[in-house]
Length: 226
Image (cartoon, rainbow, N blue to C red; front, side, top):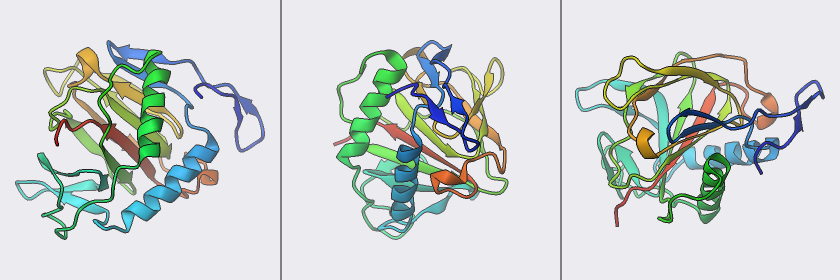
């Protein structure tokens, strides 16, 4: 599935770049999703965004509001815990995490690492939508009780992705661009690295994905909860 040739909007054949290890356990696989797969994910995200727990701007404990909009599958994430019911939204249970998305996630692990490195079933997805000036500050994904790798898919506008270290929000870090169709996986020594999205580049996505503007980011995780 990984690194298949495809054509850009001008009809030119594009050969995706090979996987690149950014840090131990952190791998960028450019152009992993086909255009059809991106279209399918955009359609599904639109359906998930309508409920049963709709997409929203998450309110942080100190009253701040995240600029990205988020909808969850399987488990509902709110700072800084997972619950079955979305007590901070409408009290409903989030949509199920579909089997096909779990299969896609395990294929992604194989594309990044050459093998599936974790046997526990992936059971939640956080889907973030970036529009306008939305961005994401440096943070760690550490609310899960499992250290299974985080699997991230990008669709739409290209973003500046900052991948740091496990000790501090500051340097050293690596800046790279994540474009539509890109896969990024981080686990092992990099599982708890700080990371963020300082900027999204408007107008850089391909409307053929079904997303006219903005950026979708799907991150699949293992909660370790029962």
